[in-house]
Length: 227
Image (cartoon, rainbow, N blue to C red):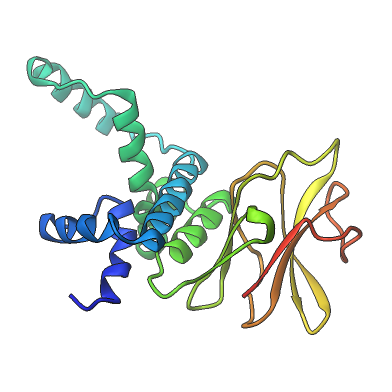
């Protein structure tokens, strides 16, 4: 594998999706590559957030009964899993499941007829974070990371921001040519899909704004990054 190509295995490793040979190769590389260790940590954190962002689907009653019957039949061979392992598997499954939901129309056509805003956001986040060509820029002050996909969709992975005071909200902005455009509101989410594309060399910033947001920033940015 080419030296630069091995870095692209970080996404697969974070999602537990590598074959045994790729895993051995990447884990040997991981021991000596600070960049990949940081990227894997970011992806696993984002995957865990997505696991809880995606609402659970209720299985059809007939399918549910079939699964329960099968579980009763095989009760003697069921192996218990520790809660921590189950949570890790669910977290790793969240990103590819969300992306597949958009591509195949599973959620839209089978479960609910159309995707809710939360699921569309989760699928958008998944697409950007799993893009091997996405650009990653640290937010000022160690507040997290800006990730911009190949199609210029943006995602904020936010850390170290306390809840906004009172009825205030955080608002993201895309700033280009001195003009700020609103790009999404959030209060306590760690992974935020921006609501507008991020042009090359634009600045993405976060401010505290009144409930419902503002059309222009009313405060100095808490943190920012240039795409």
